[in-house]
Image 1 (cartoon, rainbow, N blue to C red):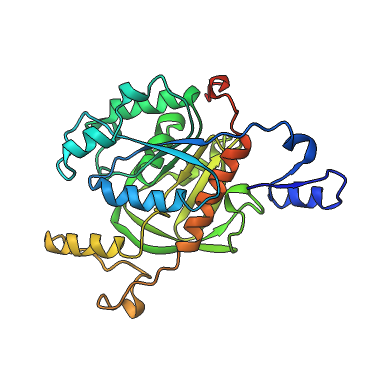
Image 2 (cartoon, rainbow, N blue to C red; image 1 turned 180 degrees about the vertical axis):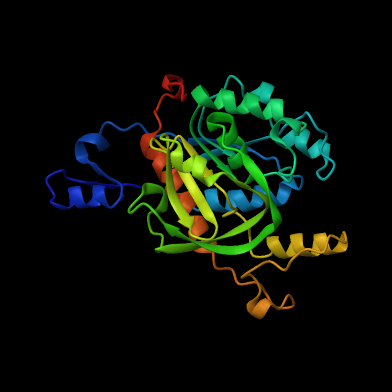
Length: 307
């Protein structure tokens, strides 16, 4: 929540420079308050664990938030009971005339396919196009971040020699950015993907600002200047055991997976994984909600199209 202060205080300018939200009394009395409306397009096969992971992060806020979940229907889900999805999830036809403050698009285990080869690609494009003038801020992560970067900016992806799998550190490239308020100079985030993006293409795109990167691993977070499109190439939402579950699953399938890097103490898979990204996950989602709360119009019908 923002700090309400008189605009006569000398701290106002410093707070703004440091990305700390402070509003003047004049602005406070003109604010209309309503719940934030968030839509989550859940592309993961196991939808219930992803629901819980995201709601943990969104629920850790003093703001009142209304959350809807949506799905694609182009491909029948085999890992989640369809009767549950029929009751709990919306389809594009249900949301196409609605407006939301925020829209989260999850990752999906389809990154080894070309984007246009993904069975539900046309349906995802419908959601992306719709979001341009029906959503204030779109947050996409992992494969969906790659997909949205490709759709709007033509950023290509390529297959990696081995799965990028583990907990990795990144450094901040922008000081006092609102989305990274409270972060240390470097932070940790889980990665679990077979592909990577063209980092030079992102650097060359004037509409995009890189917020964090690693010399060895490239970009992790970038966004547009107005933060209406935000891209995270990892999984802040993962809980302590998510990578372990993936590792065990892939071993049982005979896929010879690498042990997740920097995850188990002393690389001993019998030990409990170290949960060293939890605080950054809560900070990031809290910062995103705070930004949306501050910047979204009270009347969502006034949203302008984000080209």
